Length: 177
Image (cartoon, rainbow, N blue to C red; front, side, top):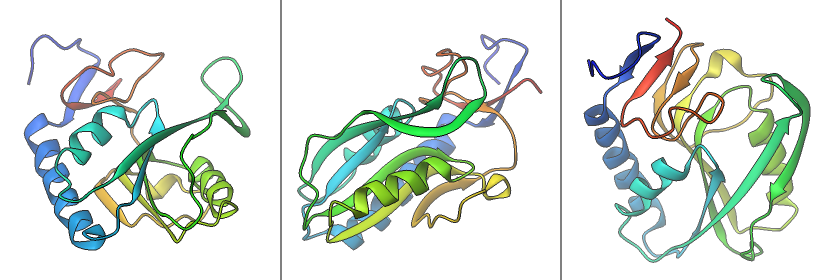
């Protein structure tokens, strides 16, 4: 374990395991999208590191864009009302769209985004996440590509945060264990 981490962080997935998962996911996605020139859509802020590593390993032409969703009013609890705080700029109609997310938890944000994007008439719409927490699912969503399935733990690092802290950690850590 990295001794520079605070005592309240325990490494769940070291950077070597994350890299192996990204390589595996990129190979799966490359097989699926090889001749399609998809739009790779990152969900900000948490996905930016994962998406960066992933797209550099994809072996086909692609376009990238980002969307940012917000479901928090003030504090740490979700308001339950999801809104788009930064919309994508790329056209979606007739495109193959692959959404890249850091973590799928309740599924509420992903279900909202799927509905929003389906109204834009994509040719196809699929979802890739680094971490999937199916035990917390409130809305049914299909994750087509997943790095890891995790239990109900609060995780940080590799783009994921707690109060905007820890995004820069190279490992995925459990906070507060």
